[in-house]
Image (cartoon, rainbow, N blue to C red; front, top):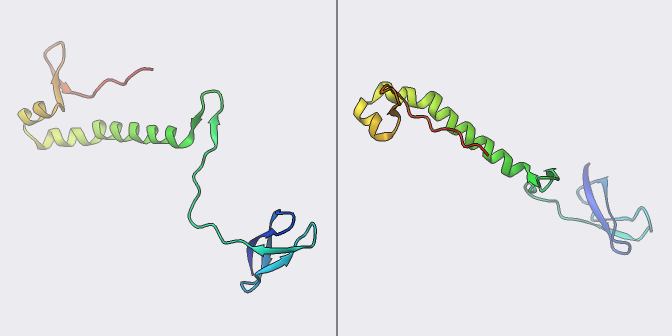
Length: 116
């Protein structure tokens, strides 16, 4: 037996009950009228819950920004050193992986973090 959702035709409340797959209707638990089985929901529903009501930041937007920052950090901390070892200095300078600092030294051209 599986758990199904039913909606009453008279009082329109929705409730869940364990029933067999053949069960199409049950008596309502409130008014005892006929309650029909609802179609199951397919797929996931989007989360619209607000994490911070003061700033009105949703989890999806905040999480997307975190993943983008992690991707950028990984590129500059892991991938760029590998690329520098693989490619010539000229190519690294053209791509911006290596830059000259104020002292004239060749350093990794990691962009500065933007402050709010």
